[in-house]
Length: 179
Image (cartoon, rainbow, N blue to C red; front, side):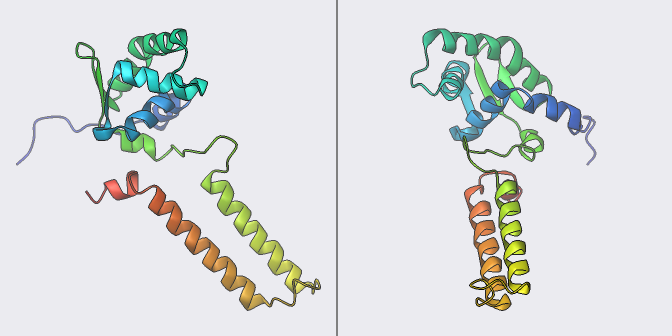
């Protein structure tokens, strides 16, 4: 059966980057992803975003008010117009929509002062390469480990890291495709 409804177009990469360029929109999407059912009242969402921005719980009243106004007037209507969230202006409820998956691909939550997974894997590969070069050059202490042992060690480190990475993000894009 053919539907007469137009197929929903994918987001343009420029639109995705525009969404993610703003800290408050990123925190909004993060908060909604962590919320049960991907839905929150705007008041609760603004309190959560204000808490994340200030690091204070509860955030100062003026900060919560500022976040509420900007979410209501600017950010939620923008996310709604792009089809990323559904914003019920009358009920003051925000719910993630399926299109958020297109944005999540670009989101990587990195703890403050922490490493992203990309940086972690780069450093692990760099360490493996430098260790291999040290073995081949015959650096004392390192060359005694042996190339096979070092290669096996780094292979296991990458495998365990990747397993943890996938497991810790199982509520994200990859595993949502199987639901």
